Image (cartoon, rainbow, N blue to C red; front, top):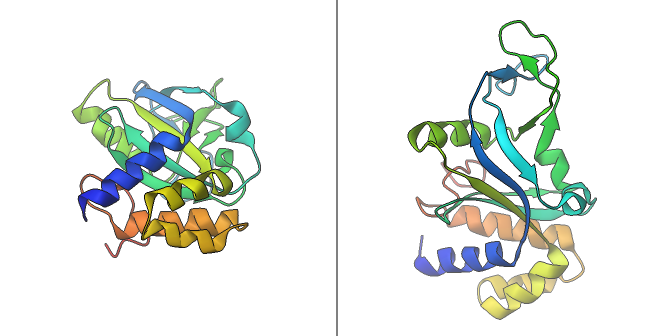
Length: 187
């Protein structure tokens, strides 16, 4: 990984729209009511806010990035439909009794275990999830130059642009860039 990849990724993060802020996790554990698998939980609830509900609910392909309060981009992903489908607010059940809780809980299947682990090490850590669409991303990629400017060939294909940038970030994975990503990283 090189420093220009980190700089370019940070430029993309800065151009993206803040959508969700997680102010920490903690409290009584909850579970999702799904048939099986690692997504069930138990999970810690988050203290969070949806800062741009319109972007969260918009039905457009987008690139989303998760950064900690230290500015390090920990995860990159895409949603082909809407961010709300990836960063969902799920019905929550008490982890011990499976009684339905009054409040739904924010959840992301790939990031949650990392958020919990980091929060245990650094109580009070926060995260911000930002989103950018292909049409807004393309002029920035052209400005950043090679290799990202090559995605200009995908003009008009918003999903292709965001998928390409996701792959580029994963190819440049390291301790200071998308360390939580596993898919497409060769790890």
